[in-house]
Image 1 (cartoon, rainbow, N blue to C red):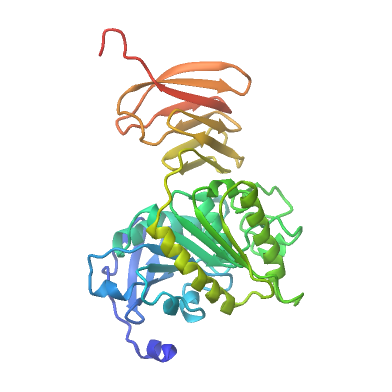
Image 2: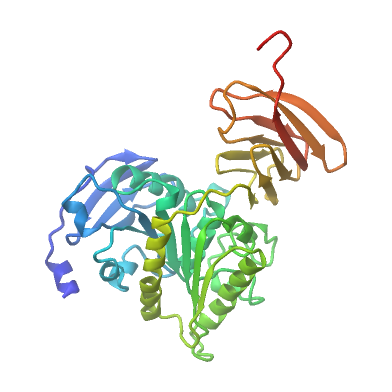
Length: 408
């Protein structure tokens, strides 16, 4: 019946006018596939070719255009595209009656939800994170807040969901992986065959580019994100069934999260392969959990930490820029309004969030790894941020400076 409906429906242009721009994207067409499902086609500065995104709206959205809903980004696996979750799986049926906008973007047949090296296209992470999310927030009936945004995916998309959530924990309240490649380091030697496209170079070479996207290596960044991991153990050694490999990867991430004291739901459903029927079941079981997460947002972390390998990155309003232009682990840890630690391989500039009083003097104390202590006074910018230069790894203390002599 569904296939018949899709064949009968006319291609209609709806929603934002073709040619509308936001966040670098240009919408070139919008085709209604049925009364809930629309297929958008964009051109993006991050991609060489036009790209499709499917969007499922709640049925109630048509009756009340002013209503806004939480959003779920669903990522497909390898050898699939934006149609996967609605044509081969049951996303539309499972979300019937829910107040939820479901966004299903293309991620490339072997794109691995990453920017390919040396600035080459495709830059899937830039497209999804820097372009598509702002576009959806601006043009679809969504609640444009972290607390009302989640991400999930299957297989390669499970990797993508956990990797994106770990690299951008300030964007997603929840993340779920269904048979996801959640730790590319296990089992030993499996990564080259699993990720045949090698978007981060050869596995046998320096692995830091791989590790900088691998959910296991980024697990500590996931604190404060609601997490679910679903996996089967395979069918007992079928030559084409990769679920036994995926099982080890999912179990590895789940164990790492547990060791870090980060809550997660981990479902090992035993016998079961890399199977679309099981992924539909995983989504069905995940949806009530997501609804509860949206209904009862977690409180903001009083103290947080984050690590990444890039020279420059921004998270939770803090921007880190290292002088040395190479991939290397750099981190902010134990971040509060009064102190933080920075671990870096070179001189680094930190621009804080806009949490401080505007145009006000603050006393900054650096306790360097060498044991030396340096003190300076920094004036906050008009937006309330501080810019702090550090010569290397240090513990940073921040206190409001006493008024200058003769001033109140």
